[in-house]
Length: 354
Image (tube, rainbow, N blue to C red):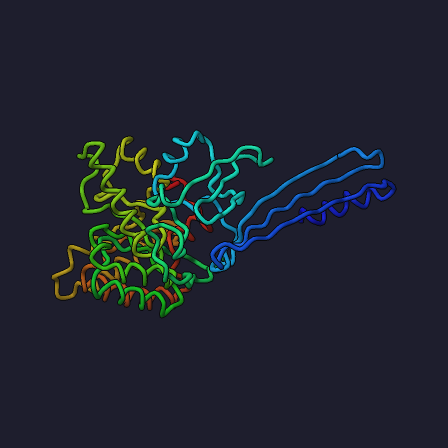
């Protein structure tokens, strides 16, 4: 669109005898990143420069996308940028120049101001996944197989807490995928460290990994250091397993206060509670528990307007996953699609969670 606008504005100037100079350079770094620098000048008939713009960007051949700042850094990287004198930054900015030992982030549109971040010195913040770049990022992670959401169809986001579990998480994923759906797994950091391969599988198969803290502590009872650790260790465990971090968090027991919320915010995490709590844990040892969980999932999916609900179960109880399998079968016949929380927020909005 901007290109066609540009062409129109050029056509209006057809009587001018302007000259356009477009200079560019391309450089490949570590056979993965292509750095493109564009230099554009317009000289008018009086030989005075009327316009000059520069742009710099880096294309990642592995993901087939332009790198943004948030593709280069992870963790609480706002702190790192602050120590380098940058208080305001745009995590979606593509003004990135990757080099062999460092990358440069241009902090303004005109590329006048920049900061350079050395890989080795800031290894714990570096997100770039390449064997030549010091980072904690795993190298063999495949791009996620995301579902195609139909915005016109009814949606429910079924969320599964307290995993990953050594067998049940896999079974839950299979259940969602049978109906081309996906789930959101609010996982505990300590379990992510136990089962990193399952975390990686959840991510690669296009389900959403979210944080449920490290060891299920009641966050409102913790001091600042312990609270920070509960979140930080979970983000790190997830990153080491699949090269990306949760953007959503659910506090254990739904316990929250202003301190908890501001700590979430400092990690770029959005808090997600639920519309329907199936209380599935109550039925984990009951003979007909799976049927009760199934009925509760269906009830909560249909609550209020019957569309756009977030439903809570746990993927650590066999009855819960068996109940999920039955509920998905029933709900899919009634025209529901099973989406991640992020997709639900994107298509349905959910003011109290934002």
